[in-house]
Length: 135
Image (tube, rainbow, N blue to C red; front, side, top):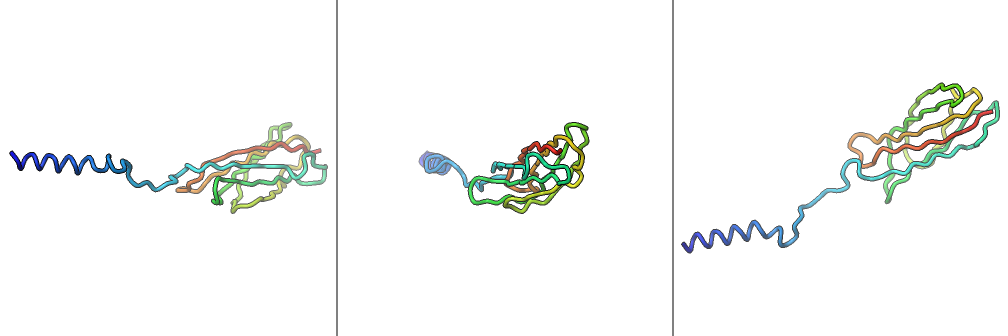
């Protein structure tokens, strides 16, 4: 009977010790897709003259010291005619200024920037848009 009692108390102590001492196991954070990204897009000129190209600046910010890299998919839509084209550029950090040679007609253009992080990245997908007027 004594051996049974000692065995029961010992096994209970071994099982309950993690819950009493700390409770949680080690965790490797941040996990995939947990760090938020804040994109900002600004036009170089809000109203673009007739013989000039549409240009927009893009920057991606995060919390902390991290600098996300990856693909930025850019969708340019002429709101007057409805014509749309999509392109992608590789983003390596900082502020980037991109030109859009296919946007030659007059009208208002809505440019949507979508940051797509690479597989296994800790950063989240993010999206922003800007409207530029072409005369």
